[in-house]
Image 1 (cartoon, rainbow, N blue to C red):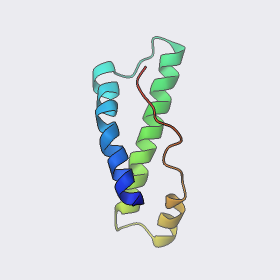
Image 2 (cartoon, rainbow, N blue to C red):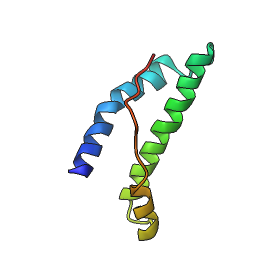
Image 3 (cartoon, helix red, strand yellow):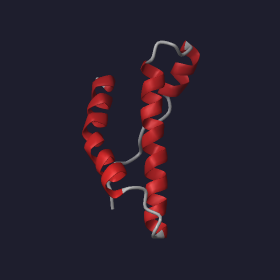
Image 4 (cartoon, rainbow, N blue to C red):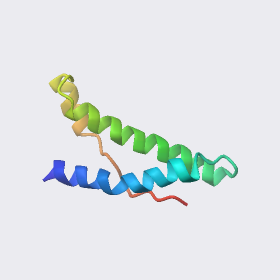
Length: 80
């Protein structure tokens, strides 16, 4: 259940991430926009990296169990 809900969450956020990254770009023209761009990039990048590392077979089991305990997201992020 957890894996499928995680995959579904990532699939549903791909259009939002695409829109933010490729259509709006990394905004630096306002402090609020800059912080949003920076945090959005870091959090989404960390989430995708975590999923790739956990699901790749080349990671030691002890490290994978530690990564599984890391919360993947605290709230949904939207462009704005």
